[in-house]
Length: 168
Image 1 (cartoon, rainbow, N blue to C red):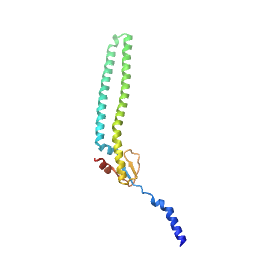
Image 2 (spheres, rainbow, N blue to C red; image 1 turned 90 degrees about the vertical axis):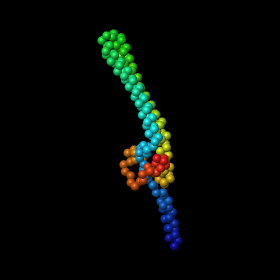
Image 3 (tube, rainbow, N blue to C red; image 1 turned 180 degrees about the vertical axis):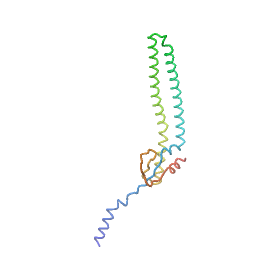
């Protein structure tokens, strides 16, 4: 009898961590779909579009100036001295350099503004996902928008829970 109790106690002790382990509850969400539903993202996209259009207009103005200088140089070239041709060619090259620098700076400006505007939106979405996961007992939430998940089985789509959290 003592041996049976000892064996039972040993087995209960040996396997108790297995029984105590929490079963993983896995859910998934398409974060791009969630972000597209958030009104803040639409406003951020509109702001980025406005900035992009302003930059495009400035670039068009520079390109018009560039084209004008090239046409004037080509038109006047036969009547210009070598010194004036060289001077006007330098003007065109300097304008080309300014245009390239402007394009690079503009790209950096747009990217920085996009990050500045999107960061609080992404943080808000992430917080809502975390809260919905905790409230509903999820251990893992996988993001299916990145295309990195090749297979998942029997997980819950938590988009509805997160939309409810964000009141969308």
